[in-house]
Image 1: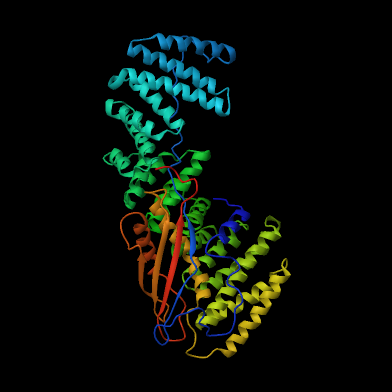
Image 2: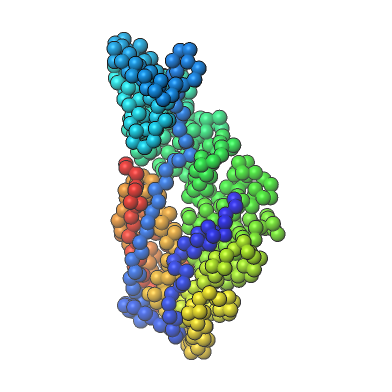
Amino acid sequence: MRITFVFMVSAAIGCGGPAEGPKAPTGGGGSGDVKPAAPGDVSFDVVAQEIKGLVFEPEAMGSPGMPLAEPKGQREPQTGAKLDALIKKQQQTFTNTKDPVQKEAQATLLATMLYHKSKELQGDDQQQRLKDARQVLRDAAQVSGAKVDDITLRILGSYELLLGDYPAAEKAWSMLVTNYPKDKDELFNRAWWAFSLLKQFKNAEALAVVKDQKLDDKQPELAYTTAWAKWRTGDDAGAWQAILTAARGWKDVKGSLRDALDRDVYLFAGRTNTSMTDAVTQLSSVYGKAKDQQYDLLAALGLKAYRFAGRWNDGVAAIEKALAVAGDKVPTTDRPVLFYEEADYTVSLDDPVAAEKFAKQALESLPGCGQKCSDKDKETIVESISGMATLFHVLYATANDVRYYQPAHDLYEATIPLLTMNDARRAESTKYAATLEATLRGMKAGTGTHEKGAMTSLLGHHNQEVQACYELGLQSNPKLGGTVIVNLEVEQSGVVKGASTDPKAGLADLSLVAGCVAEHAKAWKLPKRGQAGTTRIKLTYNMSPPSSAPRK
């Protein structure tokens, strides 16, 4: 996996809240906008977060191909005016033919001619020829009724998919499988039947079509649709094994289908609860065991699978293994962002010391990038780490968690000299660094609490986890949207001792999402408060699907 520095920088900064961090750190022990319930207790509502979900769909299938029926004795398709004349003549022949069997044969000939004609056209004209071909096949199939020929159904099913009419495609492929169960391509046809159902989010029906079929590398289409049907219906283990089978069967696929398959493999690796060890072992048979191939695999797991699933520990582990495997052969353009990603992940893990270490490694690797990285890209990394220093500063100043002081101090010290393109930002960071030292001198034992602004910034680093939960709900209902409220009860130590949601956790729609978010929230860790007491935080997530969400 070779990712350009520019892409990686934009990806790194895109996750976990604003790169600039919270603004204007002040003195120690602040309480912010809080409502005390008992001595030392605080409660507040965090500013509502907008969560935009992605609707994932099976996109690596390509198409079933278009079977063609050429006129007898014709070696090459006609074109231009000659093809137009043949189409006109064939249309008349089709209209005049009454015998159902012969009418189907004439329909396949006419559909083939119209298909060839569509290749000469563009836009609406091209689409119209394809629709004309489909209508001819539909008319012939209607005449034959239950006795429609398998070839007619196969071609008709291909046209329905080509034109994106998934209910009609479902009908054609289901008839093909049902009427011709002993067809040599029965498993292939079954896969396209399931695919047509998946595109309509008829997930349970799709699973019923494929669930009793034995999976094999030689039938990757069936394995692929099985993977999607099982994932969407909650069988994570089955989905993972099925996508592995599909990936092995399509090991040599290239181009856009390769990209789509890789996306799905990493999507399932991150979201089916497969352990990193198992994922690496099993995917090595697909992506290779050589050092450069292992580096690509591990980096992709860290930067794609685990990042977008919000699996921060696994993300750090995968990147560390990638760096160890490649050693000094890690591309110089990869190093800054690999280290930055690790720093960002460990912020979410409440480990400021580790975050500081990784952030410094990111800064130290920038000179090695040389001319391959633009000054603007380098500055983006520096500014992002400067924002991390500010976040740590605010957490120390408000909660009085001493673990955050030294990382804030050291990252200010490391980034201020490197802020060469933004004088205002450098001056601001210099001012903040001085404020931090004043805060240290004025901090008193037994003071410090969780403050609204600081917690808003910190908890924003968990938004990707929330988005992953929301996207799980979108797999069964692509138009799902609404508000999930999470109420946290946090001990003085920063441990979340309770998480309740509205709606309550359940098995479908927003209740499913809420339950998933609650499970993640129970593992979140906030800074330790200097002052004894309990913190109660209300988090509001407004969730909305893409504006172009598929029709269910």
